[in-house]
Image 1 (spheres, rainbow, N blue to C red):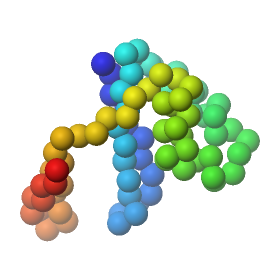
Image 2 (image 1 turned 120 degrees about the vertical axis):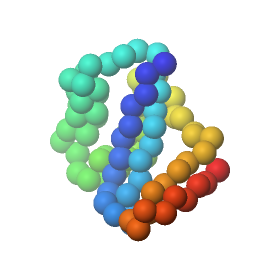
Image 3 (image 1 turned 180 degrees about the horizontal axis):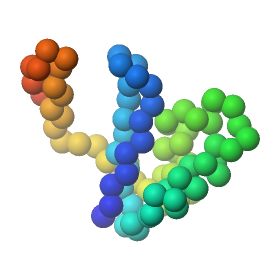
Length: 82
């Protein structure tokens, strides 16, 4: 399995998602899939969840849900989530 991350936003409004696929795409191949889908459309097609749906439904990607998450805060504290 190969893992791919897509993200959107900055700071407090930042979100990232991990997808996996059995194929190892080159960076150019991965970019082409996303660029071909979003080309010619407004911001609504550049939404992370719309892109995820396209990758999952039409390109064989699967969503990955981590078991645990460790975040390092701006003051260096560790926060853990399940």
